[in-house]
Length: 156
Image 1 (cartoon, rainbow, N blue to C red):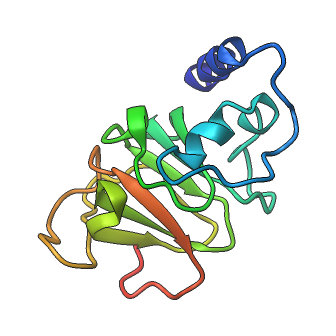
Image 2 (image 1 turned 90 degrees about the vertical axis):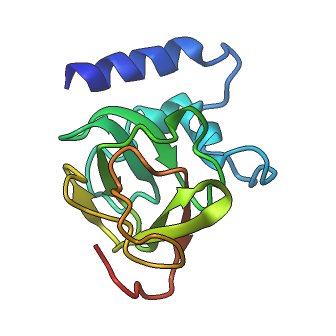
Image 3 (image 1 turned 135 degrees about the vertical axis):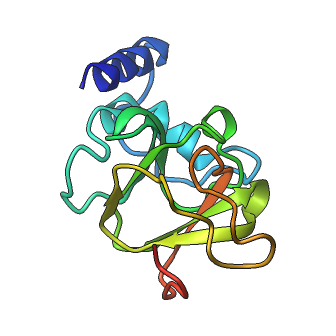
């Protein structure tokens, strides 16, 4: 909990004084991460992934047990930027499947996380779908993600 509070304090201090507190309504260009836009919105950042309340976000954490939230995602994110390859736990708070990818720009292999699913640790889990070496561990290896309504071939 202390790590989460510290992360929220950092986000609040980093937000410009004129920042809007409403959810972004437009998608940003693919070269800019949607996750970064959401993370910088203080109103969303303070509650995203706090509970399964039908939110449309997925969150990635630096530590196991949902500590040290780094990424708040919505939609597709071709590059997790500073949150890339620092992932130990994950919450999918959406009604969609979230595919997490080993490479940036949705580079395989990947793994599929069903809707409303939490992983307090990725220990022992590998990327299990797509092309490429499907034995890469997920822990500290996620670089990009997509949301989809299509079924998972091999859900985690």
